[in-house]
Structure formats: C-alpha cells, structure tokens
Length: 167
Image (cartoon, rainbow, N blue to C red; front, side, top):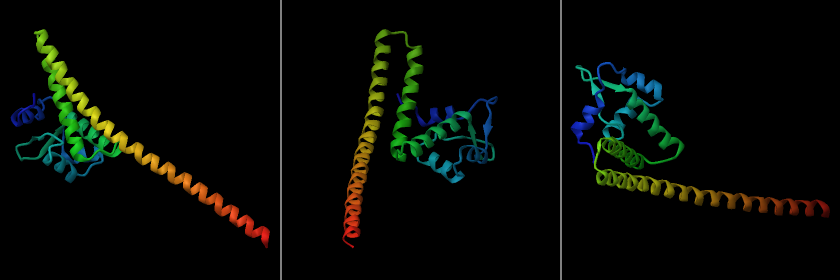
C-alpha cells in the first residue's frame, strides 16, 4: 500500500499548531546545505514540504527526523542515495501497514498485513546483508595487507641486521 503523491503532500503539511521551520533553520539544525535539502526533495528522499503563501518551504519536526535518518544511513552506514530511497520507502510503507493493521478487524487481513510487513523487512535485511558482506570482504583485504606489510618489515629488519653484522 503506497501513498499517492496527493496523500504524501497532505501528510507533509503539518497541522497549524505544529512547529514549522524554515529551510535555513533546518539546514543549521541538520548540518545539511539548503541545496542538499532541495535536492533530497527533488529525488524523492524527502516528501514535498509544506509551503507558505510566498512558496517558501516549511519543514515539520518529522521532516527533520527523516533528514537525520538519511544522514545516518549515508554517513555512518555508507548507503547510496538510491539505497536510502529504497530503505525509506520501505519504512514508509511499513508505517502505513502498521496504521492499517491497527484499524483492521479481520484476522485474515491482519495476517496479510503482517506478511507484507515481513516481506518488506526481509528486503531491508537483504540490503543490509549485502552491505555487510561487502564490508567483510574489504576488511579481509585490509587485514591481509597489514599482515603482508608486517612480514615485509620483518624481512627488511632481518636484512638490515645482517648487513650491520657483516660490517
């Protein structure tokens, strides 16, 4: 169950009593540039934000939390923007399923929603497993390189000692 563009835009417009932030405030708070914020919206990482009558972007707290999540996935875990978009879309869909599950009264419907949520979770897990496998391979290469360097240094020190003894 994927939200339509209209539903996403409505969800992005917070209620009047919610705190709203300017693009400058969000950039300062998140450490991202205004250009990056606009780009994330353009490529679908951030749902379209609410706008003022003057067409200025307005961000809600949930937008800032999503941006922090994007930064975590990008910087800490090294995911590409495409991977991040897929992960976030999956998380969004699971959130929709969670809301529908709470409203569902039919047991069969609840089971179907849980199965879809499990499928989405497996997709995310597969992405993480691929990332881990790549990191493990990289780690193995680096550990082997260090071992080779230690061996070469030992040989060089032995050769140096032998030369010193011969002189």
